[in-house]
Length: 142
View 1: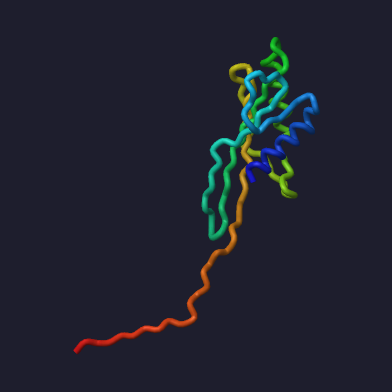
View 2: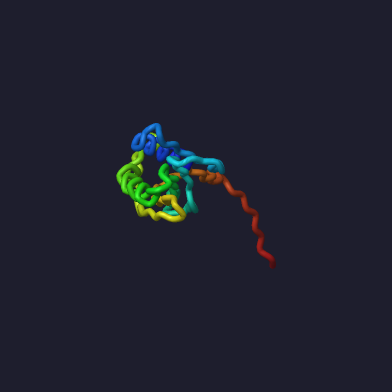
């Protein structure tokens, strides 16, 4: 599911920013040029909720490397503002996910945009069938 969400984030970025910008989910190359997004999932967590329900917390970081050398700060803030609306709703495997806890920071000349996509997971019932008969032999001493 994490990879599906990352792919949906990449598609949302492509739809918002166009073909001039590229989104990556793997390691960024050293000779990377600006106008690129790097998508990663930070510290996913799985918590048992009730019965067969589990709550998955998935915190994502979308890093943006600006095109401009002179106006990096301005460009990062402009992109960050666009990401608030772009990543609020994602369609993943015919389900709609809402991004929460959205925030961004500009550090070291690049944008770090954080968003959570939390959801519930239902597991299959793995109950073992009950025994039909039990035989027991007891005896009393004396």
